[in-house]
Length: 291
Image (cartoon, rainbow, N blue to C red; front, top):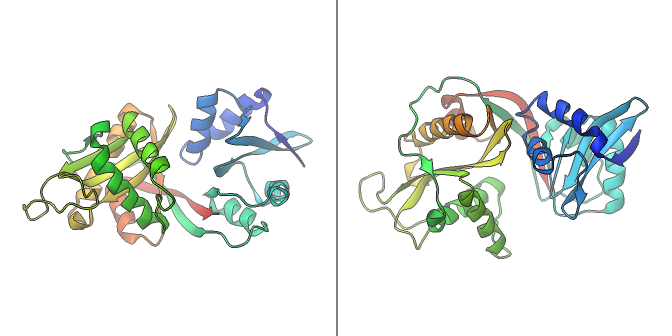
């Protein structure tokens, strides 16, 4: 096998491969759509192909995240050799558990920062069992104060460490960018579930608080991946999350792309129940390994 950066010549092959399963390949579909080519190499990363004598077998994006299409334990071998030669950097391996766990087991990078070995890949395919929440709307930049606090809390709960432990500038810019592009959907309220004024948390300087949010984090005309789903703890167990996800998913399918997906941790039984009620069906198993 040979390992080479992909060139424009392989754009059609790559696009066909990605479109075989848009939900599974949403990240690379968005990347290739944005660049208009399989020839992607620069400071943020490089898109490599693994070849045999008959042509390309798999493609791997090596950057801030490492994702792949067509990857197998067989095609992982030259990638592992390259990664071990380069040495450890801050990145996350995300994709089918079959290749992610095999590839990271071959690395000589020391202990990862976090491992999520079983994450159901869920696709919005069924009629929701709940009505869509009527209060869900597209967030605006003016909502940044409330949304930033909720986003920090969501990330910390999900990943296990704060995204602003080394400073908040980069993460605040990310949250603002999602709002600016119309990619955050939310429900705001100035009242708690008991009708009394809501407590000023997690956005301590905001009177209205986010009680539900979700981000259309990865998007192309083919697929959109929902990320950053969060419900205020005071409102959990009241059906807001499933109704909110039903509204978010319908909006994404109508306005962004026909395929709407997400992945969640297998141990988060409450979240999996929410997604099932909102119309999601499991179509695979992802894993995430963070360095």
